[in-house]
Image 1 (cartoon, rainbow, N blue to C red):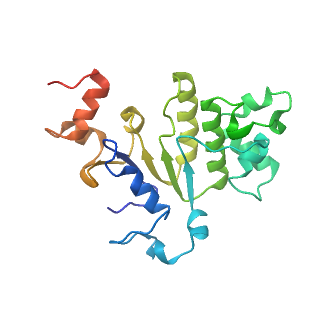
Image 2 (cartoon, helix red, strand yellow):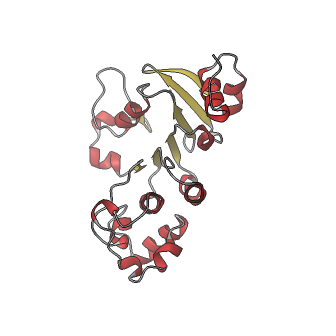
Length: 223
């Protein structure tokens, strides 16, 4: 498949369908045995991982935080960023109000793996990192999973700021989070079996996407 600059692509489908594999090969966590991946006409197998990763920002399902301050954890997105740039990223990620209420503010230590923060707070730190990195390609891997409704509203607002003018890949099981994607790719058994916008896929008779949508919105598939 071909992705246009600035396009938002959602990857959905049953577990084991190939969504995470696509992300891993875009990040070049391993090289493909067949086929080629190009970014701006460059074969990514012929560039260094360091230069590749400088142009890709990842917000994972379970962000990895270090036992350092919130300021340092956000700055991990771009190590040469100033304190002011870190704080602007925190504001855009809707976490600044929370940070300012802490006794040590940005100098608060988050504990091993961010144990002192809630799931939603850790996600917003990861989003602030990605905003600070300002990479041209963005990967959101289940970035709103397992969150309560209040946290999800904040994170969806933060993601609006994050995805502006960026080529974005979204992996999501919760289909309500990808309705506004420019294109949805439906994976099954390692292949793309359907693609299109939300409304197009819903109207396609017998589509897997429509069945998954009915399952989530109605609770159960008809038998």
